[in-house]
Amino acid sequence: MARINVEEIDTIIHGRLRLGIMAYLADAEAADFTELKQALEATQGNLSANLITLEQAGYIAIDKSFIGRKPLTRARITPAGRDAFRRYLGHMAKLVEGLKLV
Amino acid sequence: MARINVEEIDTIIHGRLRLGIMAYLADAEAADFTELKQALEATQGNLSANLITLEQAGYIAIDKSFIGRKPLTRARITPAGRDAFRRYLGHMAKLVEGLKLV
Image 1: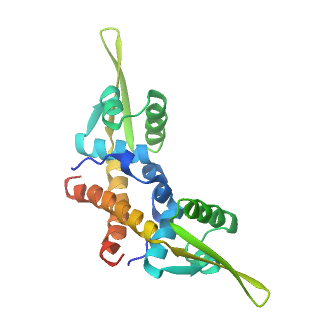
Image 2: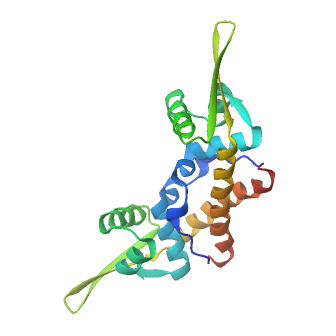
């Protein structure tokens, strides 16, 4: 099988919950905190922490607003995030290519 | 894209270095410690720790022997490890299928 250089795997995206967030946002473009929390079955704290990691990497942007007095947190994927996710999927595709030989 | 359930991703295999070890052993069947260390550009301690995690999960078996007075550590993938790796690659394949829509 094609050996992958694991050093090339983007650890920011590779983390399991962050991978779920990126996959979700790559599809949906943007999502509310509550929507992500339900879709990924994540706890409040774990989701928050991982969103911050992705925001700091520039892979997502987080918009905070209010609906009436209720705070609304919305995350959307950035062009840099989309590029990074595409690269990540490319590395995983190389790995999967080896599937038939395993 | 097909949304993946990240909970299904086997964290034992998902760890970046462990993923490299499993991919290497799925191909090579077995490898010496030194060979793995060089191929994966890992430190002694990090490689050891991750081999132990995989051994404890039953995904690899570790044989220790001596060549003269020199200790030889050899890791090989187990049938359970091969099954788990195949399942892991299946989940990643589902993720990669979404590539064209990203």
